[in-house]
Every structure is written in C-alpha cells, then in structure tokens.
Amino acid sequence: MTGHLRAPETTHSEEGAAMAEDWWVYRGTGGPHDGIAGLPPAPPWRAFGAPGTDPSTLPAPPPQDAAAGLTARRLGKARQAAAYRADEREVQAVNLALHLRRPLLITGKPGVGKSTLPYAVARELRLGPVLRWSISSRSALRDGQYAYDAIGRLHEAGLWREKDRRAERPEERRRYGVHRDRADREPPAVGRFLRLGPLGTALLPWRTPRVLLIDELDKSDIDLPNDLLNVFEEGEFEIPELSRLGPGAQEIGTADQGRTAVVRGGVVRCAEFPLVVLTSNGERDFPSALLRRCVRLEIQPPDEERLAAMVAAHLGEEAGASPSTSSLIGEFLRRQREEGAELANDQLLNALLMAGRGLWDGGRGHDVLHDVLLRPLNES
Image 1 (cartoon, rainbow, N blue to C red):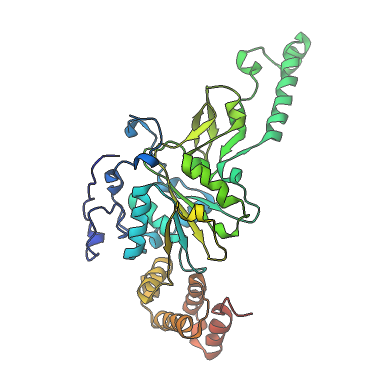
Image 2 (cartoon, rainbow, N blue to C red):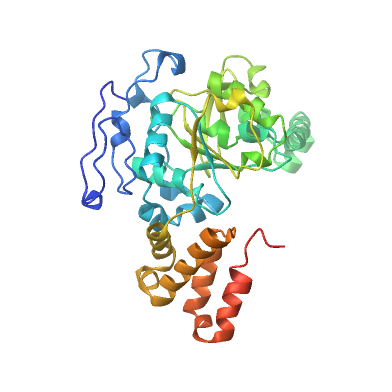
C-alpha cells in the first residue's frame, strides 16, 4: 500500500460513469483496475501486522479463476459482477469500509442482491476469490476460523506407530519392506490435519485485503455477533493445536482450494484488515457494540435499469432486450411497489428463463409465470 491516494486510470468500461470522488478506491464501474494500490495507510487504531513490513514481500491473493466449488459457481457469474453498477450510496459505503478498515454491514430484503456487491468489489479491485462463510443457527466462531481433523490425526498416528514397530523387527522389515529412514520414522505433522476457514484465510497476511462475505448473519446463534467482535478488533486469533508446539512454523490448508499457508507460533495475524461484508435480511437486531464498529448500508430493491443489467448478465443481451423481459420486469416492479409483494431477483430470472423457452407464448403460460414463479414470498 502507498501513503498517497492514487486514482486508477479510467478504462473504456468507465465511460459515462458518474465522476468519482478523489478519495474513492472502489468506483462501482465494473472495470478491473489497480486502485487498491492507492489505499492510504490504516488509521493508527486499525493498523495491524508488524511495523515496517514491506507489502511486496507478502503473498498476493490467488487469481479469481483459481476458485472452485460453490465459489467458482458464483465467480462464474463474472458477467453479473461486471454488469453490476453500484449506486453512489453503495460506492461511498464500500470506500468508507476500505479506508476505515471496518466491516460493512449490508441489510435488505431477500433477493435484492446483497451478496453480489462483494463479488463486484473483488472483481473490480482484483482482490482474488471472495471468501464466503454462509451462516446458520449452528454456526460458531471456530467454524469460520479453522477446522481440525483430530480423528484423522489419531488414525494416522496409529498407522505411524505400527510402522515404527515393524521397523524395529528385522523379520518385519524383510517381509513388508519397511525401512528405518528418518522420513519414515517422523510422526505426521499436525498441520496436515488443520484447515483455515473463510475467516481464518481472510486474516492471513496478504499483500492486499481479501474480501470476506459473512452471509445472512441474522440466522446465527445469539452469541456469534459478539464473538466476532474480538476477532474484528484484534485482527488475529490463536490456534491452540499449533501454539502448544512452540514458536515454529507450520504449513496448513486454507479455504482457497488446494492452497496452503505458513502459520508461525500458532497465531493467524493479518497485515491489512480484510474487507468484511456482513449481510442481513433484517430479521433481527444486532448488539450496539457490533453496529458501532460497522459501516452500515441498506440496499433498496433494484430499479428497472439494474434489473435489466442483471438479466443481461445472466441470460445474455438478447434476453435483456426482448419484449417479454420488459413486460415481466415492469410487472415485477409494479407488484413490489403497488401490492407490497415480496419478490426476489432469482424469481424474476426463473420466470424470464421459462418465458424464453416458450411459457410466455400462451395465456396459461402467463398464469404459471405469475402464480407459480412470481408468487410473493409473503403470501402463504
């Protein structure tokens, strides 16, 4: 990171965008750029990592195409991330969170696109794959920090002890071909049975901040928001299974598919606080201690322009420009505004997909689209 805010060069994709303010790092235009290099140093009360550390010596985030599984499916919607155009309030909130090194708490009704924003930020600022932690009522802080396969380690340790006993008997060495090489006599390293979760991976010392999405925090146990506070304030946590081994380094797995990291002294400590995005459907209140430490943003249901961009990103430009698309988007918005219907964006996508396959062509098809695929979520 540099100490001076340097605006990224304007790309062709940014033509026609609203004039960005000088302090903006994220611009919400969808065009990837290196604006993160111009992020000023953290406030003294939010500075982490060893003083004087050269960021260029730290590992860079993996490329976005290195994601796998669910994350790959979400990042496979690169067209959606590219098409996403954040409004000024969203851009301001993201930049405040980046400058202040504070979590961003996004609230809004289900299906308005709360989780799309962090993917758009990660793509535009080239911050690597989004680390996603989906919350349920059973989620605990450690689930996000790391997982330890104690049973697997015990099993492998038993195999090692049996192999070591055979190495002591000449007849067994001849029968099973067991040797007394030093590598064969070493017990399995504990790091092989540890894997950092999304939160733990985000708190590794990266060259640039990672993006961590903690999705639907309002589904959590009542204690989780408070448990997160200490980690957010300290920017680090301890792995007891490693710290009891002393100050040495251990290589362990991460939430980035197939990648490992070195942890020293059993402590995971960030160099730059990650961009943590917490999403909530507004179904519960959070403790004031969490709220005052977050930048808060409420996302409103998208307008016709943003819905059309979303449709084009998912279904292609032709689908976005078809008459049935305009008609369905208009009906979608009318029912939300005039009837108070709770409708999610993915319901609209489902309806448009089936309309493109012929369901729009007849009167009965219209009824199926409206009564089944566009049935309000608040209708029993």
